[in-house]
Length: 300
Image 1: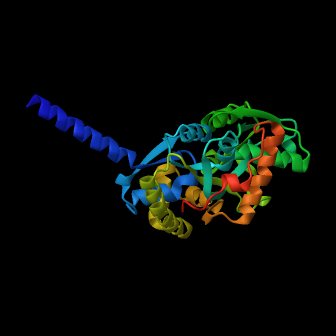
Image 2 (image 1 turned 180 degrees about the horizontal axis):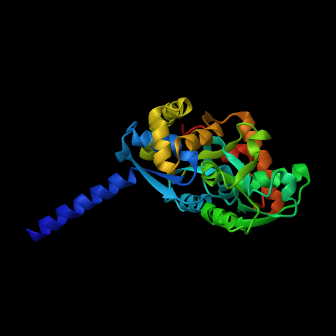
Image 3 (image 1 turned 30 degrees about the horizontal axis):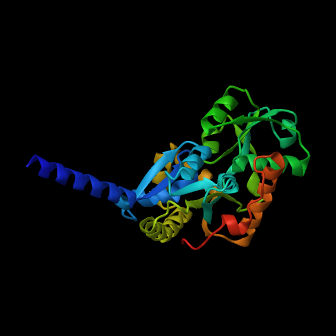
């Protein structure tokens, strides 16, 4: 009898493991607005949550590490981290752009223009999309900043509040939560309207057939959720306020500087390729990652 019970327990455990292995493991960066349509879709039960595991991270580099170690199958990830992983031979591919714009430079009240920041300290996240945008802006405008690197947005915000830096490069909705003490002095969308920031990225080796099917099921759900976000339904606004600790005015302002859309249009690919040239020059990558290596629409 004892042997029978042990065998039954083993079978139940084995079936449970197999069921868990069939789940699509999704990684998101919690402070970012980039996962709003996805998180909203789950909150409204637009899709069967039991087929998915939603795992939160505090920064892009943490999510990148989880993806290359195959602990995450699909992530909403800044494009720079996807390129960096691909340049090192990891099987990460961008299957769609997703969240666009959202990023800007926030400074204290003593700064009124980008020129006022010349020779001052400005904080950013190393190897991130906001760093590459800052690098591009510096070169385009012949400015000279003292760049200070941080690992997480919270560390960067603390440095700004402590006046250890004069400005930081950050994104919504964190920008709105810093107002009115700190203000935006430049939106990168002024130079690059609708530019991609965070993309839908997969690990092709961990995306088994069952997980691939769940990913394909998720795409039209995301498109429906994006429509709800774009029309700013009451449910979306209430969810955004609750999830990010915003008031209604802050939530609307954050969405004024956010574009969600799915696709791999040529303009977005050209933009990302252009930005990644800065990483080649700065030594973050020792080789180029060409479009045929990093982009794929066969999983949608």
